[in-house]
Length: 223
Image (cartoon, rainbow, N blue to C red; front, side, top):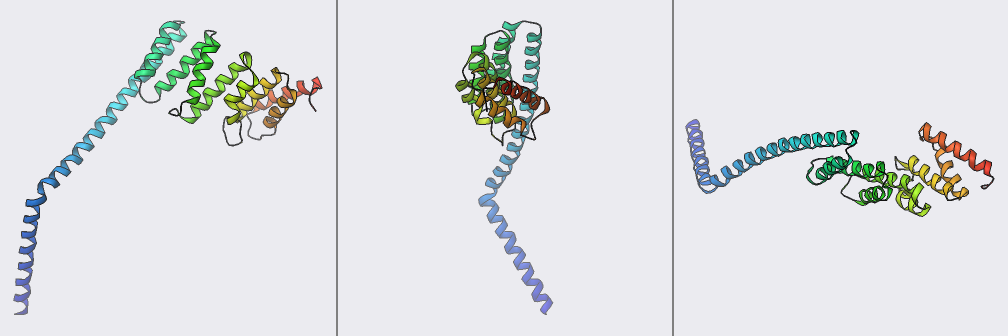
């Protein structure tokens, strides 16, 4: 008798659950199906976006290589136009690469002022990755050694001549060269010594710093 009672209770519970499910489905079924469909659509759209992004990046890569070919062929006007188009319409990292190469092209054409302005603009653009901004600042600073003042060079790169920055060695070098050119041997010596005492300084940069220290010491203009 107990077994029959238990069986009856189970059947009633199952029927209640079934009825609850039917009621819930009648009320929420469309919402659930809509949510599932939305999830499927979102997944499909994301997959399509990834495919489109890859295609766009691939196309931008081809455009960038074509622009570099124009540079090598000496077709600077065409190269400049191609790089400017890529800055506007390119995908992925290619717009900023195009900006960097266009700035370099100005320097190669002998237009230091335009190159410095372009590199400085990139260096201040917070939408650009930090390492690219720092590289642009360095490029501007090296050009300013010949055409600008020590203060202008310092404004570009002294912020990256710190122990935590991977590009500090080049920053210290350009600061030292600018100070040397300005006749400030004390300041130049300080920057070059920071390079030679940094165990992580690349050999070529450290060797140039030692050479400059030799010239400074020989001048007798720094203690």
